[in-house]
Amino acid sequence: MKKINLKKAALLIVLLAAAFLFGRGVAYVRYEKIDEQVIPASGSVSSDNWGLGFGQEGSQPTGNASVDELKQYDAHFVGDNAEKVIYLTFDAGYENGNTQPILDALKKHNVTATFFVVGHYLESAPELVKQMVADGHFVGNHTYHHLDMSSIASKESFEKEMRDVENLFKEITGTELAHFYRPPQGKYNTNNLKMAKELGYHTFFWSLAYVDWYQDKQPTREEAFKKLVGRIHPGAIVLLHSTSKTNGEILDELLTRWEEMGYTFRTLEDFVAPSE
Image (cartoon, rainbow, N blue to C red; front, side, top):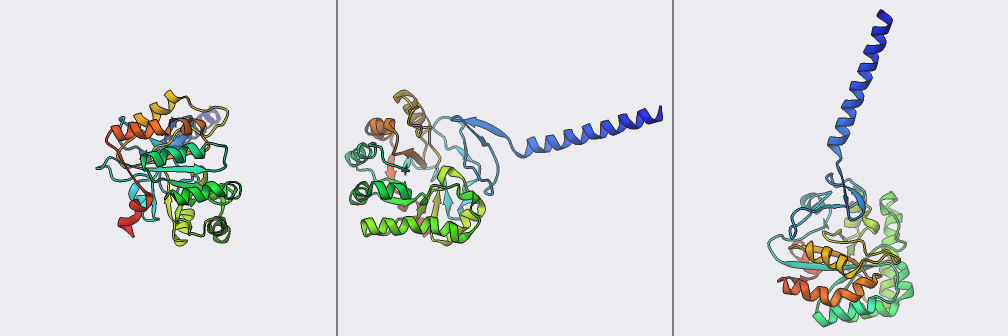
């Protein structure tokens, strides 16, 4: 009888320990599904996967690191909540015919954007890069090979990914690359942010984006406007992809709608100017 009781007691202890650890895990990280991506709904700057949680329509989202946590590394994801201002950015991984209509719409509305480019884009579409510069846009660093930078621990390797973009951009345009950095796929860690800062970069995540990068599954106009108009908010850093056919088709109308809602546009240079 005593042997059976000991077994029961041991089993009870195991179950209680498992419940305790499970409870701590649930309390530490809570997950939400947002725009077809499972992301941490809360966390810290040491996380390696950028994500957002949205509340009331038209309000700023929360990130998995706060504005103040990111600021110590010259990293950002949203601007001032008091002004209806948009900071428009595009990630440019390759060229497929959709950059030109995007540039045309930006010129029509006199909006200056930032294009985050990778090495392949610089190599394959130098004339469009020159046009970005000629039109007054900023060109930022999206790394040369679009790697998961959170997996790179070596400062030398990290720096090479950044410097190779800088050097080729200068070779093509004769100008210096803007020291704005966007981690590929939003993957990062604290060490990455420190290294980017040491290289003189401001890291820019985003406070509004949508699933626009699948070439064979482009969002409809209705889906795009629902996300991009419904979730726009003061101080928004908007991420769009220049590869998106939908973005090329709707940008003119989208900019008009945002303007009709009372929004104006500023640059990432305007964003960092107060902290320089």
